[in-house]
Amino acid sequence: MTFLYNIGVRIYCLLAVILSPWKRKARLWVEGRKHWYEQLSAAFHPEDKVIWFHCASLGEFEQGRPVIEEIRKRMPEHKILLSFFSPSGYEKRKDYKGADYVMYLPLDTRRNAKRMLELLTVEMAFFIKYEFWYHFLHQLSKRKIPVYLVSGNFRPGQLFFRWYGRWYRHFLSLFTHIFVQYEDSVSLLAGIGYQEVSVAGDTRFDRVHALLQSQFTHPALENFGKDSATIIAGSTWEKDEQLLAYAFRELSPELHWIIAPHELSESHISSLQDRFPGSVLYTELKDEVPEGCRVILVNTIGKLSYLYRYGSLAYIGGGFGKGIHNILEAATYGLPVIFGPEFRKFAEARDLSSLGAAFPVTNETELLSTVLQQLEDPKLLKTTSQIASNFVYERVGATSVILEKVCIKSKTKLF
Image (tube, rainbow, N blue to C red):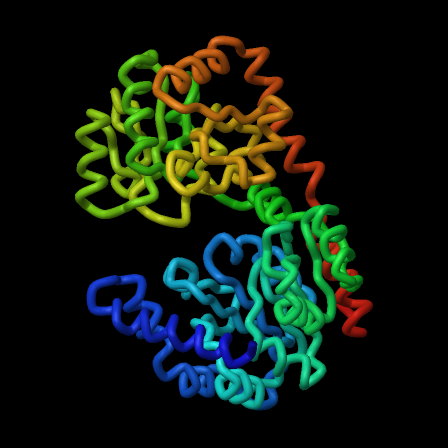
């Protein structure tokens, strides 16, 4: 089976190389792994004590981030290595200041894993959520380096739980401990004989709750929504923007909008300016929003999670495609959230919907009706707002649970 795994890894790499002249993501994936060894050698000294975090992409990074930042605070003498598998994570977080070095994960071969771990003095490693790389895990285990899976989320359909999944189950034994989000995952793992697991919760709640204490002010936006309600639309796609444009035309002209599209190309921003007449770009704001402006288009990255504090109600994009984006960043500020129909695979969306603070919609009419229901009844909006903020607050604490267990397992003083 190892032979087939090695073949599969190399085929994946070959396909990326073949597609790279035409596909930007494939090109970044290939180019980003060139000269990795030389660059890593230059980034660390042999005597550096390294803690390694690995994430597949941006979403997993957000789950690992609270642990990274807490360990950085408690173990400042250690160096932090952060690796990504996907360009969508690396390209957006390659300048992340919480790590001493950010890189693409080298191709998972025995040679690469051995070279990397011979080069570095890794004291512990954290893989986030779904990352199971055979050779890297084996080399970590062989060197008796503690390795933890953080924010794991297991489902019955995964290979580990199939009748033919014995080889894949071996991956799990290589972890020192697995931290999962839900009790269901503990039961699944117990069913195949794995016991080194505990429920820590979802570290994203720690991350978004910390936003409330972040130092971010924007005088123009504070005045923008002072006398009227503001809808914040985050990570929107084309279908989302069609619905929002309809609501913009039908709702009161006194209502304000802040729209942060997923795509930030000049052509797309220009099309949104046509769709929302009189809009102003975020990067063009001065001390005040121009008089008569109803819509601000956020044409830069890294601001959305802070901008929700200026809203009354949130619309989260992606629900008409593969799935909704992060709803917790809005909920932590007490914003009820609206999104498209593809939300079922996100536990927080299901839970908030059942509590009455999240609202899936399938068309323009439902969106309009939901917005009106919330904004025309201040008492209802206050109630749903409180439900949303409480939902986040009651689930904070996963990072502390993880670090306490890590302290015991690795015999490292973190407190």
